[in-house]
Amino acid sequence: MTIFGRLALVATALTLTACNGNSAREIRVVGSSTVYPFTTAVAEAFVNQGSGHRAPVVESIGTGAGLKRFCEGVGWQFPDIANASRRIKKSEYAECQRNQVGEIMEVQIGIDGVALAEANNGPKLTLTKKDVYLALAAHPFGKDSNPARTWRDVNPSLPAIPIQVMGPPSTSGTRDALVELVLEPGCAEADPAAHAMKAAKDTSPYDNRCKRIRDDGPYIDKGENDNLIVQGLAQNPNAIGVFGYSYLEENADRLHGVPIEGVAPSYATIASGAYPGARPLFLYVKKRHLRAVPGLNDFLALYATMWNPGGKLSRRGLIAAPDAVRAHSLEILKQRTALDPAGLH
Image (tube, rainbow, N blue to C red; front, side):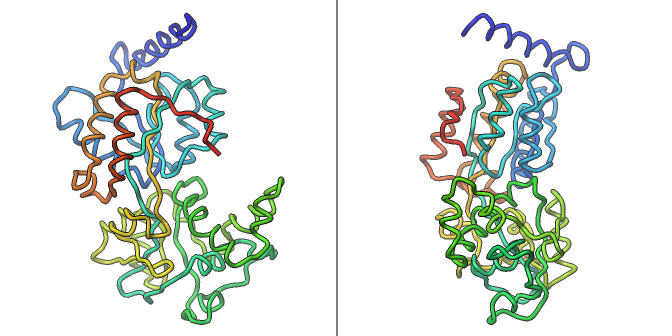
């Protein structure tokens, strides 16, 4: 490490201990509403260990907003960890480097499913990715707007009830995953022109046609609090909700999953990859903060003891990653291996 690198680490340590007099501050985590309950569970267990560390502060503001704040800089006023329900983007990583965040660790904590759900007294919809695309795309087939108002407009075999899908905002990794895992494949199936448009140098026509979610009413932005979606489904049995699988499992007494391509979201179908909405969940950690924030290493080590099959996080709805993935994540924590940005998009 150069003298400038060592000076940067010293400066980071000094700024992190400057908060509240001379006492080091608590661990700070921001980001995904999907990962929030898992990180909160680890934070509770961390405090219950009786180590004397302050209780970590965990905020649910969405993956995009969380990574934006995470990448604003190093020092006591900036988060140590970002929860993310999708991979960090190349542009976000570049923003971190512009702000001299330095090396970042990427740790996959498990798997989740972007679950579509409805109330137990709902219409028992069964959808395809094409159905979801035709219902939610802002510009299907390049049209100026989406004319579909009922599910029957999308598919004659579906009931003539209004399309009402309650989901997260544009800053949410869950919404990004819905687009990537469901809308884009549905667009490719429905629209023969999609493949060539995606491969073109200018992808903006493809993005407009296949990735934009409509904002004219049928998609209802419920913010980053997934519990509001759960409450909304209880009040409107004909609506569909979009959130992480853990919220579906937690509310199984009043909600059930909507099958996509004939596969309902469950622990088994998500773990096996059979469910179309399966996706990895991540923590992003600033390496510079590891030395400066007391307890941060212990917090991450505790996280790794709780993400195993049958562990405490699985009881909160986290789906354990395969053995090889968990072993790789543990090795990243032990070796403090930095993310290689070459594979980012």
